[in-house]
Image (cartoon, rainbow, N blue to C red; front, side):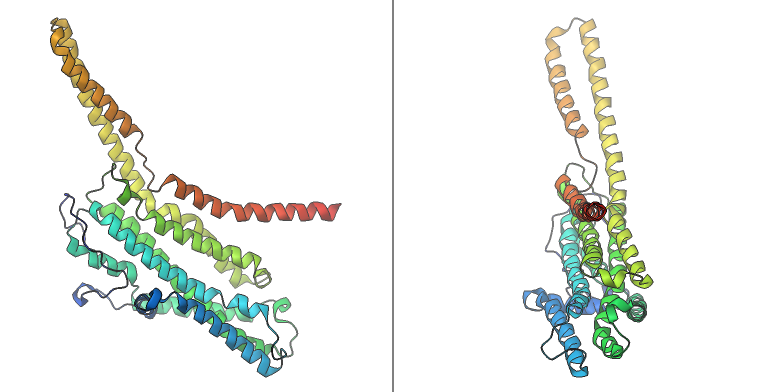
Length: 368
């Protein structure tokens, strides 16, 4: 990845290098993993491949029912709701990963003028946002597969039912568990990398302008997407798929990690640019105060000399500086639009509040 090689002057925005697009091999410092390459191929499919996760979910549901029907666990034509629930996780992780890459591409294009670097460096940053080294992806896939196997074996008896015929359930549900947990593990690696890259590009950029809000806000949509993606997964698991979480230590551990990511993902990578904006704002205010002090001293000198006719330019200058100071004072230092922050907090807290209220009502009704 390039360091700060460009000048501090702003450069015109050129055509963005796509996150999933081909990159000059000389720019690639490592071989991307299989999930990175697969999502790059999705980008080139009709409709950017948005239909692939839905098709994958249907395949998982079809496999589970074919096994359950063939084994006699279910009558032919009878539907298993748990198979449909489990089939959501893997495709959901794939869809949110693809959406994250598209969001990262747009954010990088919007933020690039604030970097102060030559446009030739952008392709390398795009490659870094889009790809994970193969060794890291392979390790994540292995951890996910082990976690999926452990979660399936440790699933509560209330979900799997009687011992007789349980092997058929294992075979039916195994692909959904394996895909869901492995893609979740890869998703964790991807999001950690995205957030680290956001923090780094904010730290190394040389042309951040506090008055230009578009680049400052650019990556907040990526971080809020990451936070909401994990939060939605947690809420889905604790509502629609609550039975699997009860007594399942591995499943609960994955959910706990997801909650931590949902809370930290939005704020943590943007904290660095917040600190920079606070410092830039302080510098601007000190400069205004210095100039106003100079004008004030000059004004007193002219008053003492009774040069009243020459006071008008000083008064106009002071008024202009005062207006500029008011503008600087009201410059926001948090790198996200206020409505985005409000929406994120609402999306994060409203389901929790609703859950607590329903539990409270249930307790009160049970006690009455």
